[in-house]
Length: 223
Image 1 (tube, one colour):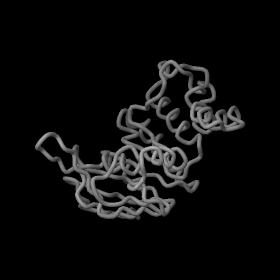
Image 2: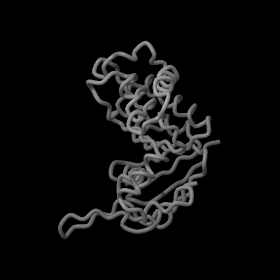
Image 3: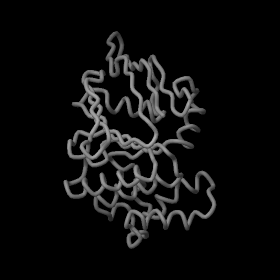
Image 4: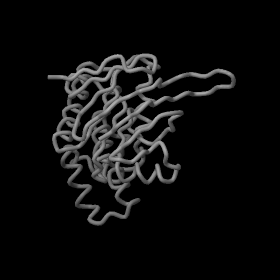
């Protein structure tokens, strides 16, 4: 479970303070698929980045599986993220001159996982990318790149998948395909949290959390 208590984030720029998150209280259960929506500047990406251990809170707590990550030092945060969290970026964050195979294999290499070839090929097959395994990333379409990014995110088999606008750079058809892939991952027991501006994406999740000016203004369960 993710239990967020009184989470506040203030960005300081000289004498000016920008409140990005203002006393957020939120619980997300294991196995849920949740979307976070809101206009630009509402705090949705900031919230996701704090959950992902990319950013620090100014105040409050984020407790993931009984671990208060807001109390962790940087090295401990990095280890916790590596062991528990996978992140899917809007801009894919892939190595352009590497192949599909090499990009998916990379986290397995870094973490010295055995049977890397079997695992990598299995993930590529799951994402319908086996035929593209030897292609460089810069030769792929946007939809293919996002599927490579998802395969890489699944490589270490973490239980929490975070996605920041995963369909933002895709056309409608590819966006629907990526959303369906994320839903299938959720059905395998993973917790999936998606920041999105697309209501079609949000409507395929279990809950829609809406932010405005750093505050939660709605928390809707999809039936």
